[in-house]
Length: 277
Image 1 (tube, helix red, strand yellow):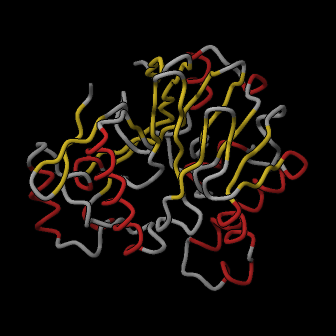
Image 2 (cartoon, one colour; image 1 turned 30 degrees about the horizontal axis):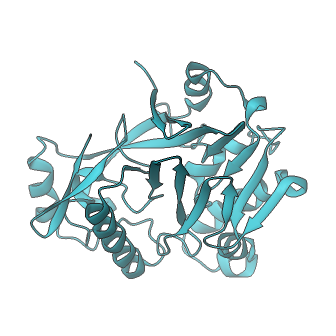
């Protein structure tokens, strides 16, 4: 089974790296009636929502950027395959010069360090937005939050520490690398974001974690997942971005879309339908 999907975006080469996958039951969407979840899943002949854990490799203008790095060994035996995906894509850890974290949740950053806390990508600069760094660095705040957030915060601080001498903090819509710009998409976490790649006439949007369960949250953007720190803001962000994507017809991807994970959004009733162009 291939773990990669590659497209040319202008002069850039973009590869989705599938670290692994899992399934979410209705309990992961506690603010939505279970009957509604069951009905939406039934349209896909499913009883649970399938999700992937994706990283994205961007090769553009002599730069090699890795956006997110998967959950390593934290999420069980169906995940942790980023090294194999990178090998299939023809790049090793030493070949990454820039890391970008869409946010500091474990399934996006655990793969940036070893179990002992050492940096995996020894030549890479880590780029993170200021709001995200400030939130997870506030130990007094995160320790007061419900489980599992205090533990997640500890991992976030370990990653920031591992790259402390190669950490670049940017504003919410700052430049990650030439042609690659962060996009503020708050709600899931305070500094959560995506990015826009522009190369020649090509464009690609990464929506971060605005969608965890494509079979559910595209059809009904009001469905929030339990991991959203501010569910109402996450809902508003999801609706806004999906509306913009459907209007512009731009190609997009995200942290949890299913392989091969390149989509366009099409309006469908009160929600949206994801199509693979």
